[in-house]
Length: 307
Length: 158
Ligand SMILES: Cc1cc2nc3c(=O)[nH]c(=O)nc-3n(C[C@H](O)[C@H](O)[C@H](O)COP(=O)(O)OP(=O)(O)OC[C@H]3O[C@@H](n4cnc5c(N)ncnc54)[C@H](O)[C@@H]3O)c2cc1C
Ligand code: FES
Ligand code: FES
Image (cartoon, rainbow over all chains, first blue to last red; front, side, top):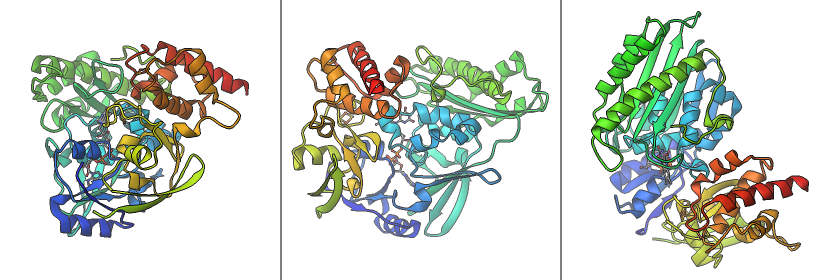
């Protein structure tokens, strides 16, 4: 790795000043689990890394039962999934946080870094989209907000302009009748890049028999994570039954535009989108109904052959 | 680029060093501090051979910058045994023949310690899941998992 400078600002303002003055020669270091690998691999050359973990707004998360969850962009995944209060309320986020990398990676990696790295395969992104999360961005021209589904624009690229940075991610309090789930297909049990990933969430009516709304988002089947808004809109107001779930899964499959590569073919990936949309909807529904959660982060389920 | 002066705590001792910002914590440990117990397998976060604990949390030291250690409390494999002898995890690895070439061993021991100190009663499934970020090319993992389960038993008995 070539020589670099290291900056540790204490405020967002200072970080933005460095980012603005250095252009693409400076990048933010959160957990470094993407950045340091890419820098070493020669993907880009930098003269400064900006460690943002000394900035309070980035290194803390706050949970307020009226305002929701605000995750600082540099909060490590393990801090989120270790908090039992959050895991009950944001199950889809917990699914993603516990399957990104292994325990060592989760000690460093962040939702913010996952999002800003903007890989089509980022496991955190469909989960955030399913949870209707919003990016809080600051830059030289001030602050702005953007929904997570608008954030990624191309592989490794996002809607932030020069000098802008992600400060935090806001996740609304899930309403009554809410359930969410993220699952991915990988050939191994752990530590791999998603061949396909699907995040879904549902809100059911009081009787638990009708969808009030649903959100479906896909990873690894297009140049960016894909938000399949029409499949969610289709489910709104419909009965909770196999037929409607299957139709939504078909719509998700149609929205996928994968490539064939070493991890999977177009046909396999499209098929998997359908299967995993169905599976995650079924799991989201069962969570919405308050049934017992079978998930890694509960440390109860058998992870062997889970996929 | 200018070297940075870093003050940190490693295995209970205050340590100061100069490093370049581009150097990983692993490089600093091995090349600057001559603590070669932490191994480099992949240098990209996949193998776990470089596992150390930073403020009580296990991480891959190849994916931490040496400069990030400022003010932190770090434990490496060199800090695991005490004057009284080997740590129960080390003893269990020996007695269960949980290593062959040994390159992966410091990482596995640091990872297992991170788990068992919090959850000495972790079961096999939990242990296998926890150790998914550590690779071993020799043992086939089974003896490692048995050793960690055995170590858990020893630690519970204490
Ligand atoms: C062994 C291994 C396994 C992995 N497994 C998975 C996996 O299963 N699933 C998965 O999705 N990913 C995986 N990853 C990739 C990576 O761990 C995740 O994408 C992680 O969430 C990145 O977070 P980070 O904090 O480490 O990001 P960093 O590496 O610190 O940053 C990533 C990028 O975002 C930019 N950035 C970070 N924070 C900000 C900010 N606040 N504002 C603006 N830009 C910012 C950085 O400059 C950099 O370009 C793996 C990586 C490794 C090494
Ligand atoms: S050397 Fe750090 S994970 Fe392999
Ligand atoms: S003992 Fe050789 S790699 Fe594990």
